Amino acid sequence: MDTQDAQDVRAIGARARMIRARRGLSLEVVGGLAGISAPYLSMLERGLRGFNQRGLLDDLAEALGCSVADLTGQPYVLQDRRSMEVTAAVAAISTALHDTTLDDVPDLPVRPLRELTDAVALAHACADDASYGLAGQGLAALLVELHVHAVTSGVRPR
Image (cartoon, rainbow, N blue to C red; front, top):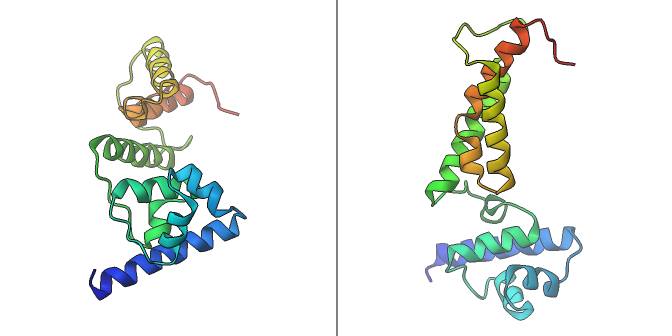
């Protein structure tokens, strides 16, 4: 391990230790949640072992209730297509929510309300099955269409 890698490993370990301590969690609890032993977690926290598997960072972040970026201090690069799809859907939904107001109704054709409620039911079913990528597909456009219906039909959201 070169000097920079060793420094990165120590920094990640120190962040993990700090987060664990702030949450009042023991090595045993976090190790168990992450699927590693308490002594191994202790070595990771002290920078004596490297995070040589991406899954280990993911598991440790989940056990600590934080993000991988919180541990690494770097932006989290999504490796799998499903995660990228979900992230893109969340960004589109955020944009749709921030860009639509009751005073500025988008001028676009919308599907009949029955089709929209069916689409909402499908999104709920996908989310219930933890298929968040499928649930998020087209959800931003659906929200905008529902917004148009709410504003143009005289129904005001409370």
